[in-house]
Amino acid sequence: MSETLISEPVVTLTEAASAEYKALLALPENQGKAVRFYVEQGGCSGMQYGMVMDEKRDGDLASEQGGVTVVVDAISADFLRGTLVDFSDALSGGGFKIKNPNAKESCGCGKSFSA
Image (cartoon, rainbow, N blue to C red; front, side, top):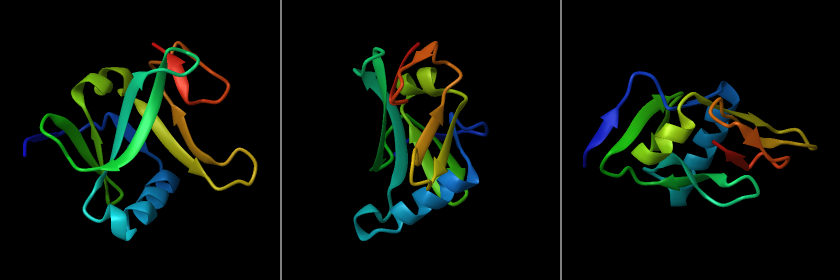
């Protein structure tokens, strides 16, 4: 399997996000997997973010962060480069938060953007 390990991650995880992903990857159904970030057409702003526990694939850009392997396909990398992912366990507004410097506009839900 051919993957490209990169020194500068496409997507950077905060400590809180790394800890949450590490807990998710410890679940039996996610053993041996990586966290995949991607973009696809859709959402109210034209493009939407996606995240899934997945196997590494040929051509992926991969980085290791806080014990978590993060993979991004080459096409999504163009849209996600420089993105920061944080996590909050607050009762109101908690969950994963994405800060993408490439997004010209984001919708109110934070799950879609235009590039």
